[in-house]
Image (cartoon, rainbow, N blue to C red):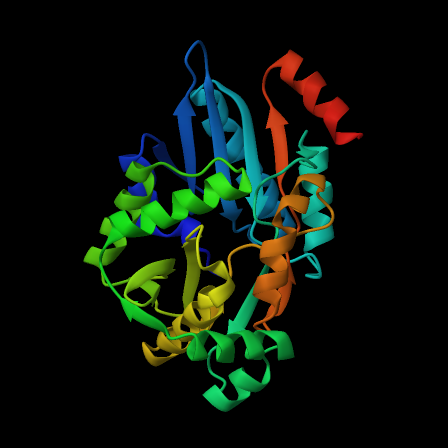
Length: 305
């Protein structure tokens, strides 16, 4: 299953925001030099070959690349679902090659996906009752949804949300760069919800290059008038617009995974997303390998917790 983080345009975005990009076994690897010594690597949604012998070769190629650039550690997230028959063999091979399970991961290991090939009536029927009620309430409250290219306004609403919920948001440079790159390829949807001409919510969507999947990427709501339920109508209209534009899937790009303790922070957002009736997909998870003895000991201790 294709993922936006293994898209050539995403690789270009990573380069423009300070990361180096390499190709290993047909996948993009992102690495950055650390201030004093070495580098850190991450390979999101790495697609392994089905042949176990080729998997071993792929891991050897990753090792060689990491050592070439003096990696202190590398994080890899296999692009394979937990219920896939190959998930356990890959898990065992990674552990055998010195990787440890990353139990403190912030990586997206579970998501919810809506099938946009369904007709609008079925999509509406799949909404949870409360969600349907909130959408009706937003319409009654006079909420309007519209498209715009105002990435500055999007970022302003996003930072309001990050301050309110106490998480560290992305930089303006990162979000604007990502938006501009995908906008040039006409693979972006930027929508807002307003009440009495005052913007109160935003949602930025990025589409893959084959126009199969659109990913929810940046969202934000105003500190005021949140009881208008504007974000419910905004998301519903975004789903319908993505369907109209020809996308086959709407990926929420992350919901809470109870295997990981720090995913508890995603609980409220997950409750909101699940109201739209998508199918849950659980990935194998993330793995870390250290190339420094102290870090190796640290990750070994953390993996036992």
